Length: 526
Image 1: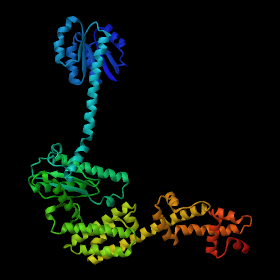
Image 2: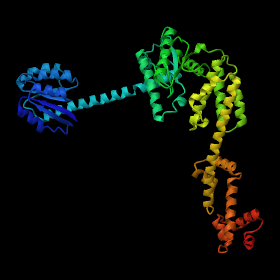
Image 3: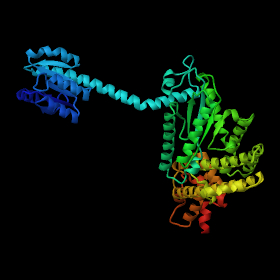
Image 4: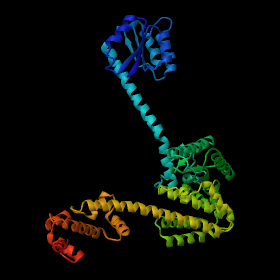
């Protein structure tokens, strides 16, 4: 509903418009009726009005004066003047105020309705445009982030290599030298595990907002969120020292305000944004080197020694294999992968690098276990501050020995938990089988009931019971048949039916194979 204000010093004219115009049908509401320009202006100062209908000539404050003042307060206000024929010379001044219409007295209802319909159409159009603009500005950050992400990933075609709109929004000049920085939050799973899931998410979001505010203060608009833990910046600063100061200041700020820290990987300088994808890859490689260089610092691609990128990649792959062997209780492979990890570690030249890497392994292990809904510190019965023990070891062998014990301990704990879980599952499967021996029992149907694939459930069943599922069903049927045969009130064909056999000959054959005698001979012995 659009709010309408009626202003006229002639009361009869006001009442006529108020009562004879079908306001509700026009989706309008007469918000107020006043008899002077001052009263109208006072109402506008305190209320929202969409349409002002006013006499052009009123004592003390004319309709023209009222309109000028009202438009200062509400620039989008729609104004309709009504007046006698003798005042029509005011029409030129009215048009200068961009008034929507000028209606002569006596006002015809049909004419006023037609004018109001046109004004309503204009208001509807403006409201739609406003909604579209609002939606656009709401989605603009997402669009900007997605386009900048595509730019970093190199997802452009042909001549349209660089999206001009993205560059304008991000304050990036295509021909200027640039560097890419990738920012990662350190030890999220590790350091935020003391918080609830909601609190941890709020901390991460607040941290990202702090990074955004910091960049805005530094007049940098190229921040792009990559994931819940990472974001990227395109920097176009002539001096490397300026980049270093800006990024180091951000690292320090986050370290002071939050319970987590950040590490930043910075690319080499590229001649233009045409090389932005290459710069992005360099920044990520520099960030990966955190595993060796340590966290809460700025790592530049130019600092990486020859072969260091390959070493980091090899370590990542070896750790993935190590964790897989640990969770699957493959102890021989677990031993071998630990040896592979420390073979690579022994290439490191400094004591601090080895310690940093040991902490990174623990951090990666904690994140991996979190993905299995496990908590590293609870499994090991230790607190996070207990990791200070790593810095008390004097040799790499000491670190390797400590880590070996912990990893094998975790593998054993996971295995026991898995066995208990499997045992509970097998108990449920066995109970189901024994309860439904008189029905058709197929592995496919039982696996669907317990939300497993037939092959997987079959393997678990054989591992847990030492017998195939189908053989187990036959065994339980024949055991129950023996019990029923001891009761002479059941005929042999009834016993066969009660344990799921529809064919008496087949039942007799399987019974004889199992017990060396027919069901009839077994009954004679009872």
